[in-house]
Image (cartoon, rainbow over all chains, first blue to last red):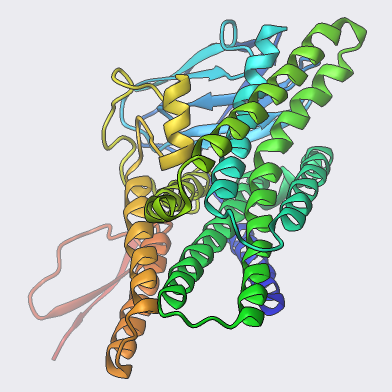
Length: 113
Length: 326
């Protein structure tokens, strides 16, 4: 058990190292702001087959979870914090996303052209 | 109030279901209660710590710290569940062979109980930290959020209640019958968690998605619906899976069930070598796939014409020389 945990930590550590070595290189960046439980802008247009860096900053006093089934992304963004999500390369189409904690108001979509 | 109750309920549900399920199928393992309590307490305190240090973890690895941590936690859970499955398989065979050495049995039992503690602790750690973060946010919003906060508590209670119902529901099934299906249940749970880990690794840009959507059954059973979410947790149902999720799910089932087969059917050294070789080459192959996903053309061919019998050297943007081969 002990040696197992030890090797586990070593492998987790090397995974972390590998992660920093193989950093994601996005070609474009888009800013997204969460304010009053809405995404601003609610619509983002990105080119097809391109990796895009999405920087989301939450300006509300409550946390939000960016979620999209079609983009396969989910990420918690605490109050006042900024988080990064990489999306793409994607095929042309419309990809909906929403805030899991305020799904009625926090809605948006990524249009891939 | 109801809104926050539903949100927290959804966050708590996964940890509660896994805990209930694992507890139900490990009835009779000696020393269980102590380890389960340790697992729950460790998971809860870990969840609070994770929520507190979220701002420190998130920027790591180019902003993908949270994803890698989630993938790491899920992978450990997968390894632990696999270990549990293999141990159970071996153990049940020992039982059937009537080899009863009381001392070693209890020792093995405690060994297994510590695995249960880790599995439950990890489930609570990962899901709990999001619930804790959500509730931190509510309490920061001030006294106006009292209703929201009591809603969140209601959500926690409802989630735990579902876990308890699952536990007692499964506990009614006789252990011998449960033993027959529990292996399969835990196997599907494990495969689902492995697929979830791969999804986080795609999000962190560590694995290729292979295909963004293999199928779409969201109009039949949405993952957002309560039953859809239930199936997602228990058997890993995904309404719009990526190729890698399907692949990892299937691979986990194949690998874990072969491990379970191997412990009860010892292989000849020759077969062992063959299996080991194929596993290593599979691993190497997948590493290559991941690596090739990151490959990009450092050198481009600018003029694709080469005369017969000549070798042409090209460097950035200009042709340097055409050399006769002979």
